[in-house]
Structure formats: C-alpha cells, structure tokens
Length: 65
Length: 176
Image 1 (tube, rainbow over the protein chains, first blue to last red):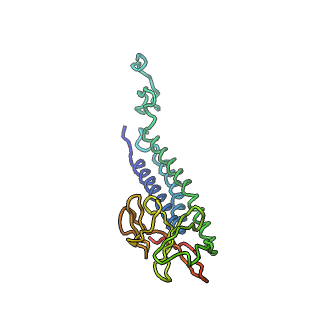
Image 2 (cartoon, chains in turn green, purple):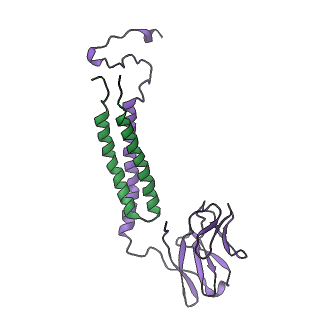
Image 3 (cartoon, one colour):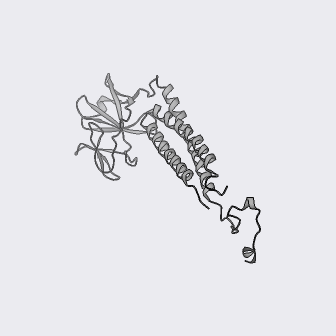
C-alpha cells in the first residue's frame, strides 16, 4: 500500500499555525494591541475550514482505489 | 491464538491490504485517524481563541472612557524625600509602590516583579527597586530592569499632586 503523507504534513502545518496564532493572540492581548488579537483569532477560526478541506481531499489519497 | 492464523476470505472490493489486521486497536491511530485528530485540534484552537477576540473587541469599543479611577495615595507631608510607601492601585488586589525621588518628583509602579510576581521593595540606600526573590533590580526613574531575571519594566502609575495630596490617575500601557 502506498501512502500519501501530503495531507498529514499539511495538517501538521495548519496546527502549527494554530499554535503560533494562539500564542501571539494571548501575547498581543496583554500588550493591549487589540486589533491584532481580533485578526489572529479570526485567522485561527479560518484555519479550521482549511484543515477540514485538506482532510476531505486527502482522506482517500494513496489508497488502493 | 488460533483465530489469528485463520485465513480470512475477503471480497475483492474490500481487499485493501488491511483485512489481515486482527489485533485489537491496531488501526486506532492510522493515517486517517491522525488527520482526523489534527482537524479536531484545529477546531479546538479556533474555538479557544474566540474569547480572546471577544475580550479584545470589548476593550476596543470601551476605550473611550478612562478605565482608571483617580485615587488618593497619601498626603505629601507623610512621605519624606527618599522614602517609599505601599498602596493599592487600581484595584485592592494590585499592590503598588510610590517613591518620592525628589522634592517634587514622585515615581509609582505596580510592584509585582515582572519575573514571577514577587513584591518589589524600595532599597533606600542603594536607590534601587529590589525584588528579594531572585535579586531582580529595577531602575527607579524608568522602571526598567537592571539586574537579575526580570526582562520587562514595571508598569508605571501616573501620579498627580494637588493641594498637598498625591493622587494616582492611571497605569501606563506596557510598550514592548
């Protein structure tokens, strides 16, 4: 069986971005840069559908079919 | 044990090289399961940052009014030159320190050390703000750390003197 790890890598990247966004959002909140906080939390929300699309596209990749 | 060695007949369309997996939980975290977990994690991150965004928006829209009350610290007469006094500002749970550095010059800081929140004290002889926990030192004129583990300045409280009474009027925002 040949596996495709593209989806795995892309999703790892998405979650890494999530971690970075969350960290910066919390830091910017305490630095009172509220616009950045809002942008980052919207970015975090936007990453979820991206992750879901990657999953949908990749779940059957590299299978036998 | 016997079961594991039994040959399984599989329909052609189901023959995806996984029918021979018979051990329990062998496929509990396969490629697809891992991807599912990652998508779930992304969703969790998305939800967990929403409160921060909400709080930030709230702060942004409520910015017009000055959030800090004007509060009396002490009478000028009770604080000699070179002396320091503890007070609480803006709330009762945030301790602060005012130092009379000159005849008409006052410096006030929230005195939770920016390292691990130990209280910072005024070293009268050394003319330094000292955190005894890990020997962090701060410059009294700027609040910037000069020695020890702290890396960020103490938050400065703006001070106003009116008719012989010292008032605290606000906390300066932290600038990175």
